[in-house]
Every structure is written in structure tokens, then in C-alpha cells.
Length: 429
Length: 180
Image (cartoon, rainbow over all chains, first blue to last red; front, side, top):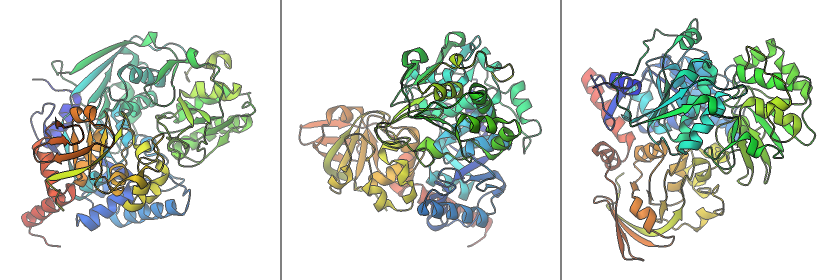
């Protein structure tokens, strides 16, 4: 019987010929990640409770200082220090200091650390992002990470796979973010609970790797265990000169079993948002256009890579942020910031009246640099808008793509980018 | 650490899709290594439940609807609930990382759509963890829980993933003949 990509990767990790959904397997890990909120407990559990002295393979671990770093307060400084000391003590090869890395889910792909066919875990729920690169990647807790550190293996329940087929191409202005928000709106925040989301179809052939990462990033917002995509020329080109190890792509067998197949016509998907207070509260942009805003945030592992910033800059160029609104732009990595500087994007942002910050998770999880107060309304390019996610439980967060966010910052209300910019320049759209 | 076979307590009832930011708002992640402090803020992000943790009597039971613990991977979510004094969580269903984290901690959680539907806040329950049966003394009802795969039960019985890893590390040391 045929297997899906997800099943093949778990079977290989478990050293088995085949697996079926529901199997519990103990599988070898190819790469693991933790950050300043999850490394301190994982390190303590590994050393003090499990009694392990060293990491199974320090060359296959990355650690980022991203969530509450640069330290937002004294307690975060302690977590940063524990993270730094543990990484040093363990000889972790891929340690990214403040000012040199950025958000884990941007840093690992851009450094070629998570590769096709691999089994990747990260102590962060958005670790599912890496699956756009044709691997099995999933979020785990700190005790799980401690287990991986100690043994190099972890238990998994083989998930059922849901297949999402996207026919035709996305229309002008419509981005990968709009597509995934639409899908989550259709299936709900538990629509793929504990399952694999396998994305395929013509629409994906025409979007770049960064857009694909936006889609797999939000698998967890549908409750999925992982999001995964096929290997193609786009994947290969992204990895050429970047991949740190040899890799073997994986494909789903033609006779693989899917629990369910969803088919979408990408051409029919409109610009959209997720309304407060849940990522599945989808609405077409037209329904919420004109909603007054206090803050616009362009940032996060979902939508703050260089292509996202290019589109935001194209919209903002020559415009000013509306009075009464603050626009905060947080690049998702240091490399993204360097590239934005080279291309003159930062000058455009600053001239528009935006606040440009260092690379960090920042406002996305209500950490720092843009936390919302009671009753405030924010349009954000991030991934979650549950109550309290970005600050006060009564703050209202709408999720959108970066061009919509930039246009809305200019007008002060939720706005179609076509009202501010006639056409997205070729090569950026 | 082993888990009691039978747990009795008063219930607190929560709705569907309670995410980890509501269970423990991210700002308290600075207390990642302090279960007591986390416990003081458990469920604080759920609208209308401000100050909830102070009302919990140790041993109380938390009952929730579907997809409990969705959102982030933060292990401080089940830790905060345990820190608040909750002895056991019963839900219609769980988001997978919350589920893993609880099992890995050896923290007893049960899945029972029947109980999630039938229990009201304040009901007195007796839960037989071995049999997977919930008795509601207030309403005189009985609910069944879904069985977990045996490996997960084994982890809960052992006290979580920590003792399991210790055992496995020990086996490896004996195989390679090294000591530490």
C-alpha cells in the first residue's frame, strides 16, 4: 500500500518499511530547534531530571534568541542568559545571538538547516513552517525537546493525511496568506487537528518559497501536526547554495491513502482577513473594509520575510502613515533586515512614519514593541488572534497579508491595497 | 511519582478552542521555571475568568469542550493548570501539543465528549483513571472516557517522559559499557 510523504518520513525515522496512521513510532530526529522561552526548561529537564550530560548531536540543533529578546525585562534577560549558557555548554553549532539571527522559523530555512525528506522538531508550535521545504516538521514541548536532546529520538503518532489541492492561480493582489486564511476559515481551527496537511496543486507552482512558508506556517492554526509540500524546481533553487547537508526529497505514492481530499479553485479566493478573536473567523476584505485601526503590525514568522517587506514598501512608497495610527515593522530575521537595507526599503518605511525594529517575535505574541491595550484595534500580518494574543484580552486583532496591512496604515482603516497603489510591480507580486 | 487511581473533586467548566494564550498569557512565560507563579495566572486570559486561580481548591477538576489547549507549544500551559491546583483535566478533545505536553509530564488528562457535554460547573465528580469512568455525583450520571494507546498510558503511569528517558539512557549505557 502506498504512503504519503509524511508517512514515508516517519517510517524512515522509525527504521520501518512502512507505517499507517495511528501507529505509534519512536523515530530518529534529523534536526531540532529551541528558543529563549523553551530552551531554559528543556535544558533543566534534560540535565537535572533526565540525567543526560550532552546533546545527541550538537551539529543538528539550532537555538535562537527571538521571543523576548533583546531582553524586554530582567526576567527575560535571565531566560536569555540560560539559553546562551546552555547553547555554549552543549556546543550547539547553530546558535543565533541577538542581532545575528532573528525568528527561528525564518532563520532555519534561510540558513539551509531544514531540508527535504528530513524529520524536524522544534520547541515552538510554528515549527510546522519548515514543511514547505518537503520535510516533516512539527512543534513539540520542552520535555519533548529534552528527550530529543538526550536520545536523538522521539515518539510520534503517525497522523492521517488531509490533502489540499489548489487549482488554477491566485488573482492579482491575492497572496498565500489570503489562501491559507480562507482554508482555515473553511475547515476551522480544529479542522486538521493532529493530522498532516499536504498542500498541492497548480497554484503552488506559481508562488515562491517564502509564500509557501507562509502557508505551512499556519498549519497549526488549523490544529495540524504538520504542513507539507512537494519538492519542485522552486524548492531546489531555494536550497541551491544554501543547504547545509545532502538531502533526499520525498514524494507521496500515487496510491497513498488520504483521509479526505479538499479541492479549491485558487482563482476564486479573494483578499481576506481573519476577524477577532480566532484565525478561522474569515471574512472577505470587502466585508471589513473601513474598520478603524489603532495599530498596524507587519512582522512575525508568517509574513515578514524580504518578499513581504518588498510588497509593503511598494504600497508605502511616497505615502505617510495616517494620523492616529502607528505602523510597526519588524523584520523576521537579521538577513532580511540586511537585504531590506540594501534595497532601500528601510528608507521608505522610515519616511512613511513607520517604526522599524530589530528582528524579533515582538508584538506577535504580545511580548514587547507593540503590545496592545484594552479596546485597541490592530491589523497584523501575524498568525493568531485569540483573545489576549497581542496584549489585552479585549484588544481586537485582524490578520491580513502585508500589502493590505501597509495600505491600511496609510488610510487608517482596513483598505484594499489597490486604493493606494495602482499595481504591484512585476517581480514583487 | 505515580498518579492516584481515583480522583475526586469539584469541577470548573470551560468552552471550546481555549488556546494557550488564554490558559497562560505569554507575558507570564518569564516565569517558565516557576510552577507556583504560573499557577497564580492560570486561565487568566479567558474572558470573564480573571482571578480564577485564586478560587481553585487543590484537587479541583477542569472540564473543557473541544480542541482544548490549541495555539502555542508552550509547556507552561499544562504546568500552569497543575500549578493552580487542578488535579485532572477532562476535555471533549485536545490540541495535539497540549496533549503531548500533559502526557510527557505524567499529568492525568482524559478525553470524554460525554463528560464535556454532561458536566456543569460546580458538579462533584469521581474519576477512575484506570477504568476511564467519570461519575457525576451532582447529577447522578456516568460518562466513559476514550482509551489512549498503551504507550501513552505507560508514560502516564511511569510519571511521564522523564523516567522513560532515564530508563532508556541507562539501557544505552549498559549496552555501551560506559558509566557516568
